[in-house]
Image 1 (cartoon, rainbow, N blue to C red):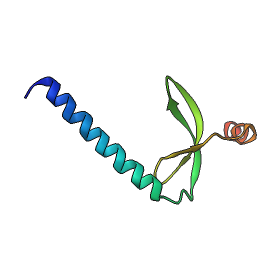
Image 2 (cartoon, one colour):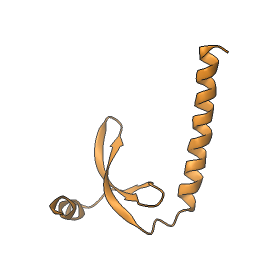
Image 3 (cartoon, one colour):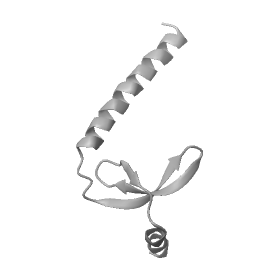
Length: 71
């Protein structure tokens, strides 16, 4: 098998895995969350993240972020 075919196969597998992750995260209730550093584009942002499924939920407010940094 050629290298190109290997890459195409791996990309297809990644697509299927990403779809499975999305389905699991969509089914999660996100009952427990915490602020974590998350890579977005080429930088890191503090975001509320579900502790169970690791889905990025939202940006923390300035007050929440300030309390997080103090703790």
